[in-house]
Image (cartoon, rainbow, N blue to C red; front, side, top):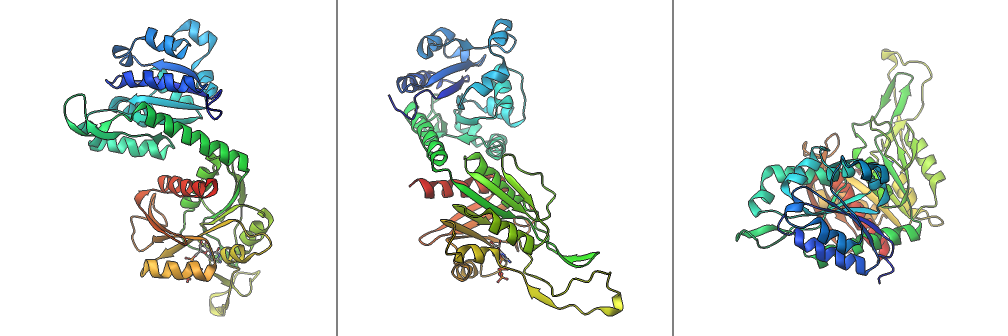
Length: 401
Ligand code: CTP
């Protein structure tokens, strides 16, 4: 029995696909390690495996029907969705993926998943054409955006005789994936990691009605804070003026100016991880005029704002173990980013090309390159949520190795 799996609670949804039989093996593997499993068998799943065989293997009742009065009294769909540590959907068909992507709740499986606040892991299984179809790929991306994760599909010979990507991962692969998930989550929890994220623009007032700022939405930083918090890392988000909603489960501090952001950053120390995603306004007026400046009196001198990233990187007494900076560049992207990494003494620099209107500042999308001391890793155009999840996965890996 594996200590890591012992007493972990898993809801396994078995959908209607020829690979449903593999899920029976998966139940056996997980049970052997001490997991508690409750299975939801969809209507089409029942055409491939029987409730009786599932019940005998998981040694639990099988959940089939959303309108089952005895079951609802015993454990309704809400408590079922709260009971587990994770929900695993294997096989997840094109239809169920589409249903989840559109937020439908017309059977027990989709209702439990929609109502759940737990990690959902999907193991897709379908014909290659169905998998690569644009609508399935759009649904897949949507679900990634919602924070669902996928194991597989893999490439190989299919039940229908065709060859390609769409096969459900083997029970062993799914088992290893889940094990890895619990391993990462539990280690992160044990390490009590703390993170700090700066995000959004800052506003530097000239007089009571005028200020300088930039059009950063704050989205990338908010998504990173959200993803860190979801990974079990205690996260403080220090945000400049942004219209975005505060992410759940983060300590949220709203500021206006670079100076306030700097002061709040100092207060948030010590942390293990610092991510400076804010588009800090580099300079501010030397003097703030308490009365509105008349247009004929225009005479403004500027001075530099504190550099928060540089302060964190050079802070010998309380330097975070990992300091990550962002570089928004328009030309000579990699060269300038590498120079910025050296100049600011940070461990990683994440660079994006803000000259491309499809990504960056006010867009839902981004494409970045992460430069650390040894590697340059590209993350191609993706939603800012997915980019954040990938960055956070790299951060977590960095701490659990
Ligand atoms: N940064 C910061 N404090 C500042 C300015 C920038 O913490 N006062 C951080 C940003 O959050 C980002 C990184 O520094 O992580 C780089 O920001 P960027 O605006 O690209 O660089 P600059 O310092 O403005 O350098 P340059 O003007 O040469 O591009």
